[in-house]
Image (cartoon, rainbow over all chains, first blue to last red; front, top):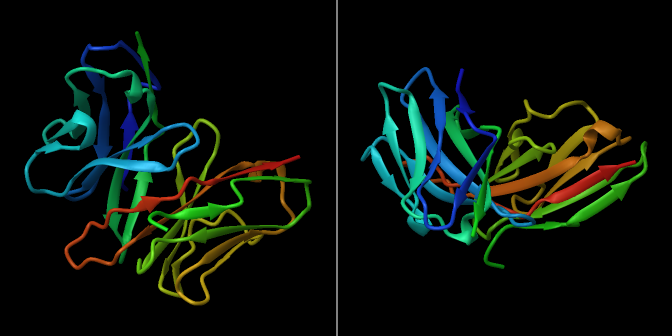
Length: 114
Length: 116
């Protein structure tokens, strides 16, 4: 079965410091992985996706993630946090059952302090 | 419009009342998905449409939940005899059907349902 585990429910950083949001996945075959961000009262927005091309994936707003098969991880990073990055982040795995069914993690809330 | 829209944005219902939630997908998108997001949780898949055909409804929690997309564009999620446990944000997403996959799903802002 496909699943993702987000290891931290909350992460707090100071503005200008690096961000690391951790995600481990479980998949019986080569997965497609995504990170989505959810700002309050706004829809989920795709940050980036991994589809078995390059293992280091660059997304919007300076975020990137690295697919590590040996560690079954897909951690999200950003070199320098901005106040506007404060939001809920979801790691997502998809699997093909005739369509792409998304399985979401429980989310990590990123708090950014001045 | 440019994105997925949902209405109403907020709905308060009395227990036992029927509700209908609307989703307008991005024009031309073949695939449409409904998700349920409980407080403090990630979204969970409810059902999937390809055009007007409902190809998967395995995530619908009970037979009180019903979804339709009769003309292959707008979709409605109906909940009959609402219960308190139905309180959640209901998200709609759409995507184009691409041969290469995986499809990127574009999400609407959601409808927040509160059942009293």
